[in-house]
Length: 59
Image (cartoon, rainbow, N blue to C red; front, side, top):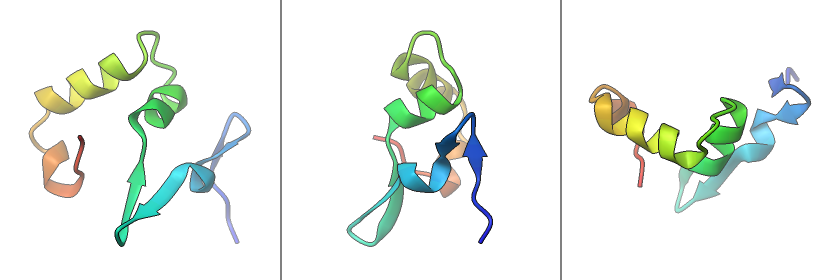
């Protein structure tokens, strides 16, 4: 089984299943992308990009 890891962080371990949907926390995404301002950068990027909302749901 191939495991995707970024700097010793297993991405599979950051994906949770809630009510039958696979989800990732914005704090985990911010850590993966090394955002200096934390979740604020991730949430702002999502609000600016309409095409994110077609496949992904952010809340």
